[in-house]
Image (tube, rainbow, N blue to C red; front, side, top):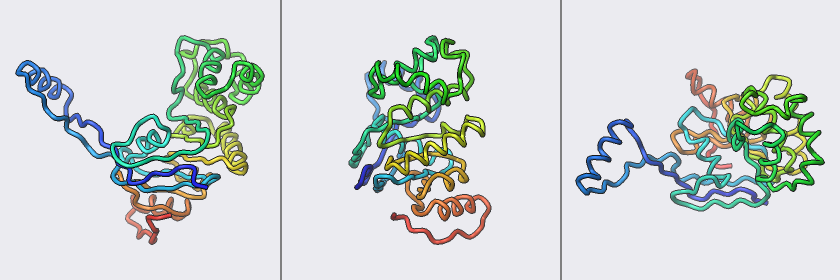
Length: 255
C-alpha cells in the first residue's frame, strides 16, 4: 500500500538576494505606489515519488538540495506550489531539535503540550510519563525549564515523546545527529522495531552510514530533483563518490 505519494510536485520560495537591498527596494516601491512581483526560486522541481507502507527511506543531498523542504511538504507543514501530495496514516515528524518546545516551560510541561499536539490524551501521557523520562535519560530534569537543557537533552525528549505517539509514518530531519552515540544506537533499535511493525520511516541525514544502517532505500536529491533512487547502499556509495570523483554506478531514478 502506498502511504506517501508525490506527483509532479514543485515548490517555489521567495528569493532574497540581499535583505537590505530588498527592504530598501520594497519601501521605495511602496512609496511610489508600485507593486513588484516577488522573485521566486525553485527549490523542488517536478518530484514524483511513492513510498510504500513499512519502507525505510533515507534522503541524501548537500545543503540547499531541497531535503528539508521535501520533508516539510510530506509532513504537511508546507503546501506545494504545483502537484499533488497523498499521505495515508498517522504522521509524526521531528524536523528540528525541540521543534514546538517552549523555553520557559519545564520538560514535564512540554511533554504534555507536544503530546497533545501529536494527539495523545492527558490520561495517556500521564501513563507514559515515566517511560518517556526513562527513555530520554533526563531523570531529575523533568521539572527544569527547557532553556537549561542541552541540545542532546532536547533531542532525546523530542524523540521520546514522538515514539509515544506510535506513528504510522515517522519523519525525521537530522534530529539524531545531535545525540551521543549511546542514544543514537538506542534510537536505531527503536526505529528497527517500528519498521518491523509496519511503520513507514523517512529520514534526512548527512550521515550515509546511518542511512545504510537504517534504510532499505535511499533518495539522492540534487538541485531540487531526484538524481538517484534505489537501494540505500548503492545510492549512498554513489553520493559519497560524487565528492571524490569516483565513477558512480548506474542507478535508476525511478524506484
